[in-house]
Amino acid sequence: MPERTAAKAGADELYTGIRRAMENRELTVYYQPKFDALTGKMTGAEALVRWIRPDGTMVMPGDFIPCLEESEGILALDWYVLREVCAFLNRQREAQIHSVPIAVNFSRRHAFEEHFVSRLCEIVDELSIPHKWIEAEITESALTDQSDKIADSIRAIRDAGFRVAIDDFGSGLSSLSFVKDISVDVLKIDKSLLSRNCEDEKERIVLESIFNFAHRLKLTTVAEGVETREQLGFLRTCDCKIIQGFLFAKPMPEQDFTELCRKGNTEEPTEDILVTQAPSSATQLLLDAVFTRYALVILANLTRNSFYMMEYENFTSTSCPSTGVFDELIQHGASTMHPEDRELFRNTFSIPNLMAAYNRGEKCVSVVTRQIGDDGVYRRVETADYFVKNPSVDDVLVIALCHNLE
Ligand code: C2E
Ligand code: CA
Ligand code: CA
Image 1: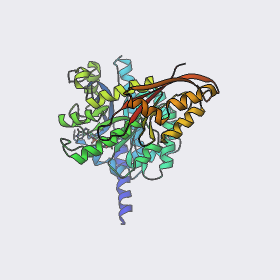
Image 2: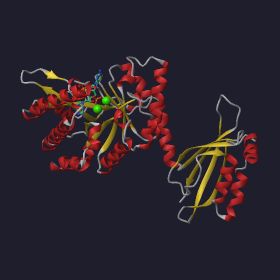
Image 3: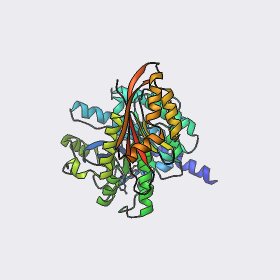
């Protein structure tokens, strides 16, 4: 028999076995909690299927899921798990136990299933489970082929109010651009990227870059397979948000998980966030505060006549380019100002005038002008240029903090 046909026959046979196991309720769901990396508070859990045979032996998903993925059988299994999860969440609610959102694994095959999202809603709505309690995990390898179809499917899941996670990120060959093009909520970094102690310099660079990239896309990051304190320490310095792994908890039967939910917290004593706070994470919080206050933040190099936009959200005018020539940015900025303020703006922020202020030892140059918004209305905005230093160059740099005064 050719290999492919043999695999298909094996999958069909397994499917028959799994169907019987579902009918006999031999398939059960284990829950592996996920924790906030800084506070240790439980933030969610992942539903992981287990096949417990009548003789009590447990078959792990790794022993049947890959084969089941060769057939439609995986679809039936995933729907079964989702139903079990909804029934569990319903029991929790009835027992008035505070629960956490549960992540359910969905095979890539669902993207090709007709009416996938309406079926998802139907099952979840049957017990009136709020959609935000369910997170769909879709493995990274799903994104590599027919990505348009998968992207449509992910969009529809999110439009229906469910959260979506990209699972096993970094395990395959998918490029970062898939994540850029596909809107998701969560990025789960694959455990294969974590060595035992995160001691390898190159590995650290790769991980730091992935976390940086994910955070800039405003994705929630989850590291899975975390087993050691060293890994946790390093992940905290990367500002990883959520940890899943044996270090905190293994996948456990429903009863144990319920107990954990009842306690409402982890085995770990909750540490003061300021004690566990990694410096990079503290800096990120500071930046969040700055970006909340200032809708437009620009880093400019006066010596090189260049700029880079660090933050640009909800500013009165939304037509600025994101990098380029500083002079042109000022010209562009001036053109959006009230005619009476243009000269003032252009003069204040001309490179020679800023350089002169720098040479006089001034720390900041600021001005208030009226700027036209996309709605045609002029509003007062303050632009404050702070001189900053990068120790590795002599260039004169400024950070411009701009905010709407009204
Ligand atoms: P996954 O989605 O990547 O799930 C995480 C796997 O990592 C789980 O294996 C979990 O037990 C394991 N794990 C968690 N923390 C650690 C750790 O600290 N160290 C190590 N070495 N492993 C850790 P599990 O339960 O054997 O599941 C294997 C895979 O089977 C899952 O990988 C998922 O791809 C698949 N799977 C499980 N349940 C379902 C399901 O209901 N539907 C689908 N489609 N796939 C499922
Ligand atoms: Ca998963
Ligand atoms: Ca995974």
